[in-house]
Length: 66
View 1 (cartoon, one colour):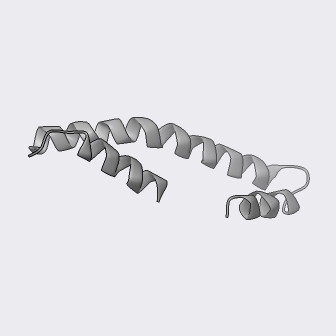
View 2 (cartoon, one colour):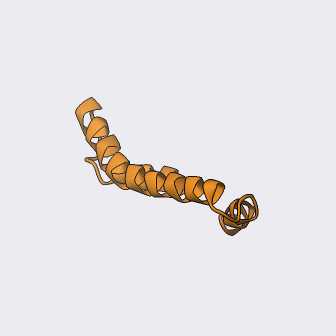
């Protein structure tokens, strides 16, 4: 949901009647925010999955993400 809200903000920040180039720019702005956040979430999940306390640590990670 956060990704969708970020994309909506990027689109709304573009001019009143955005053309394709404006929408492409909005998506690029959104991706610049979303991709690092997604990469960090994936890295955290992988680290939890292969940690010495797995699967307990992974389950705790997933519960925390709720």
